[in-house]
Length: 405
Image (cartoon, rainbow, N blue to C red; front, side, top):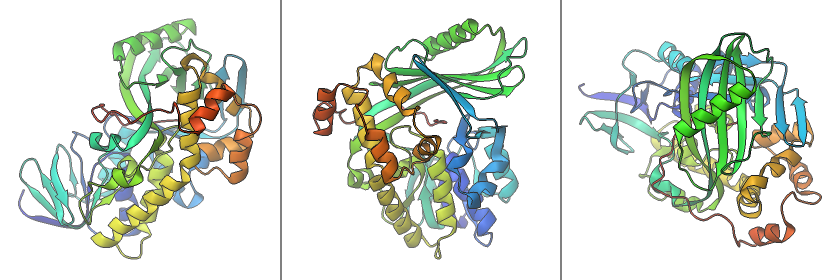
């Protein structure tokens, strides 16, 4: 490879790392940026979805061109005792779109794939091949490391998704973001349906579970059962993905950062930048990319310090969501957890939008907590007192980052 030097090297070509690279190329084009991905392609093989209300107007130009599908007529939710259509617009980004945008924006020789990181430090990134990419600043956006999980407490969101090609039009005009009218198996379960085309549906079977074990064949079978129950005749499966992500109920922010090399910045879920209850990371990935591109100084020390301050403020703002996650896992029986979300979706649409974006107001929090909770009062009191809440996450769990909604 030979000696190479960049102003900024980003380790991790997933959603967060790629968005930082795109934001820097658009807003700070004078800087040289390297994007280093251990897998064969930028973005991997994922679909990330988001509500249009998640994105600030100033940042829409960064994400709207990435959308593989847009739905402007709202979305549906369904529960055993309640159904609703909400008007919020919805979008999905496919990893192929993200990779294409990076290829177009980045100069030749600045994107590295199949480049596994051996070590990184404030002066650059050393690959397992032995090659060294020197940089004035280093950002680690490789995803939440297994060693970091022991600093967190909580449960898991796990899912399998398939793009189903049908023999006839399905007739859906809106996404079904949460269909929890299905049998509640293995924790809180819902099915997620995106109509990508007249006869194409992305269907995902999702669980809020106490353990991270994922049986992809079992979930694929349940997707097939769901499709059959809807009367959809599947001719082929053109895309598949799985994911296992933490739902955080508590933890130690300092421990999350304790092994970070001096002078290295963290980004994305590796920095804890996701909504603790939903594991939803896209809004924070966009905001942080914009934040980095707007920093007055972009040397290594400045970016590292800024990333720590940003993540610490995010952790503090997440206390409310961690408390709700603890109530969901610690106070509700697994087959009754749907009642928490069923009650939540009866609330004001603006409150729901702010919740998913991780921007709940004090009034929102008070409204969510008002009235009789949909969990046993005694258990709720114990969880709030720290008794019966989920314990530390398994550091050996095999996380698979993907879209969360």
